[in-house]
Image 1 (cartoon, rainbow, N blue to C red):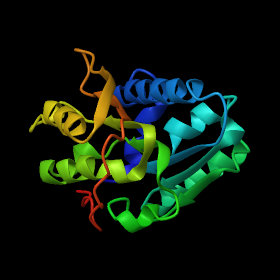
Image 2 (cartoon, rainbow, N blue to C red):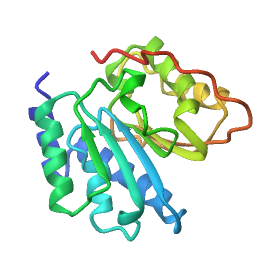
Image 3 (cartoon, one colour):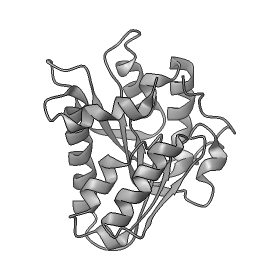
Length: 207
């Protein structure tokens, strides 16, 4: 897969990818709107070009209160994200070229208030997806929001993912899965009622 070519579908407003992006951006805005004061720390796994977060922050009043680490292994996509962040004057965004499946890539950036795992679960095994979801409490502050995506493709584990979140001390806020599209976007809040488990060194291997 050439991920640079894959991102071109974002430029077509009628594409499924653009529809998913708009849904993720709504969820990001909802989180920012619900936190009108104080700093907001964000991490984004497999961040790609960072369009979901960068395009929201470009015009959002919270822009200067946000510090974010975007983790992306492809240097071309990471460079595009850096360029976009700089163009919008978003000095709080850090883009690192690193393996998002490695826990070490988030050192110093967690726990975070907003955790983005978009475009991840559809490209890793179900077993790695479960491992990642169950490890996410260690990446979250109390009441943090996690936004994630997963398509309908086989095996369709979306209901399993929702259960894994619930089992891991998360409350589901929204699950956006229109009947006429392939994508789904979930939003969950970390309740932090128990001590989070120590995450494994490796969360997943991107396929």
